[in-house]
Image 1 (cartoon, one colour):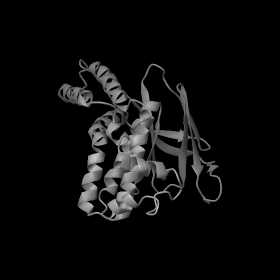
Image 2 (cartoon, one colour; image 1 turned 30 degrees about the horizontal axis):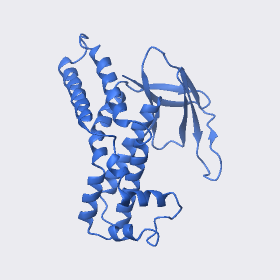
Image 3 (cartoon, helix red, strand yellow; image 1 turned 90 degrees about the vertical axis):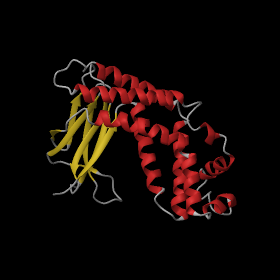
Length: 256
């Protein structure tokens, strides 16, 4: 049986930020499994992306707000006979613990990295194509040739603020993803559109397609509706064309 490819579309800026952070942390964790200098260089570049993303807003505050929002919605299920009340209480307690832990973190997320001259020099040169060559950054070149254990320990130390929020982001996204069961939908001539109920807190659109299919979804979403165009990626030198066939796909609209 072929596998499936999952496509996700966030429906607000907060979800966009959380998904990007999840993606970057996954990439960083993978790069830390490599022992060569290129893996460590990639990990530092990913760390710089994490820092830049966190500087765009008060990420810690956004995480606490989202956890509080989820707790408020979960509390409404406390008297629902179809809900496992023991598991519900456990989830709410975990959410509250994460809020308490975030609240105990002092200052803005990644503030220590902002004041790190070594990382700042790499971040500034990264804006230049090929700007992190050894002749541009001899100190970085020296560090990349240190023992792998030393490099990994240093990267983990630098990434500690993001490791602390990784669990909160994972918990938030897991609950949203599990809040809707995928349903079979039909896209006539490769196009599908659905209206969103304004009274429901839609957060995330998820589309599942067979891994061996020859097309992919392009999702456009607003507050009141979203549409999906299925495009075929044939020749990579040409623009993808919309599929003219009827497409069956699985759709889940995460709400919590």
